[in-house]
Image (cartoon, rainbow, N blue to C red; front, top):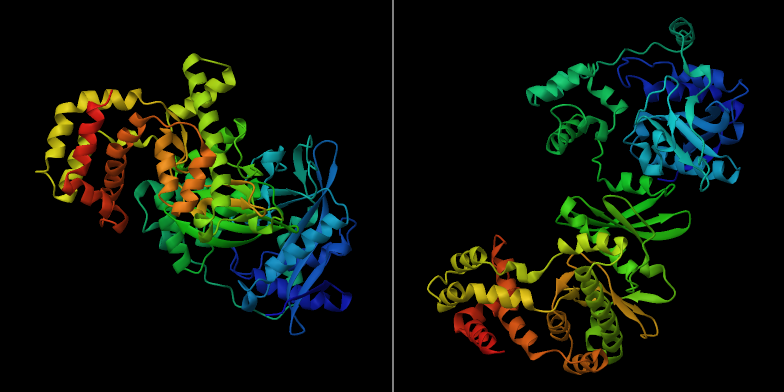
Length: 562
């Protein structure tokens, strides 16, 4: 559908007012229109009206949308900002991109005209997709001093609202007089009131405490929820993220807009300050989602973590950057997301390719990165043990909770593997039980460094001249032994590339590490496989090692080694 945006003209006025009336008929808790068309009618004649930001949207020559802007003030200094609204879309054209087209066009134009910021009241789960945040994040409150998610703001240039705070005051035209509204409505054809959906349709499917919360907030009709954000609902007694999902399911069935969870990619982008972002999902798996984002001519990658435990990757980026280990530049972060450059848009680097696994030159560059990771990681961990600066100690607290694959080697986990693989009678388990204190002592005595643990070409970034390479995706970054990483890489490379990697990596890897890894690695693989519902093909080789007795042989060799 081709949407054309143009300035509103006087000849459009009546048609736009009729459109606005249709768009808001039966909205929120009003069975008719609450006066939005009257606001548009009066606003055009007021000093606060901004004619340069008064736009209509046309489809096939028909006006199907409209947005209007006015001036407002913030704080005792009465700093001038923009306000917009109503934003109107004809019911027949809703959810077709008309409203988005109007918003993107008008925000871009407002920035071009040099305005400072936009502050307004609106649907707190809809407008963040354009980059609007809670106004209270800037210190801006409502006229009565309240902090509401429905009061939102956007800077039109960096730092535009810095140091500006106080109460937000919009023109009194937005306070509709019912008597004036009734008189104005007489100039339009009769339209039957809408039968609003009562809140009981939704709350009857919720627990008692949640029902009480809805009643306390005087939610009589389902559409009233548009005044509250998903985050605000989660603050109500009896509500949690599980119930919010249920509420969204019901809202979807009723044709009502859903609420955004705090980890929503839309809210992360707004928090990061990106204006009018255009997003496409790359992939979503196990609570981690990756998006390609374009905003104001720049391209980014957004990585969002739904689970708190997965946010460790954010801390890993910060740690590697602090240690001077090459990574993608961290352009921004929230509690739940990372903003990274889009490598596909880079002139110097590219994403890894499967052919890189057979390329000796790439292998040498990968080896340099691993050597840097291991050398600086080893020095860092040693510094933690000796007790260095406060900053290093804070990083050390993160390291204490980092992934260490050898933590899998517990008697409880070995019993789990034995049961899941049907190998309870294998003599390996008896040997582990008998020697467990010594096994654990030896594991704990192994020299640790930072380890990547997840090598594959899909996690690789290579400079276009192949002189530099580094890994990304640090969800499994942890601490462990050097040989575990080296073995992980060389097993994935061709013979020639593996030789090039080892040559470039250099240094001597103690034989004791290799013996320990030969015992530990297959058990770690088997434990990961046994945590899944079905046993994966990638663990079959380790299962064969167990059944053939090779893991037991590796254990015995390690225990004999000094």
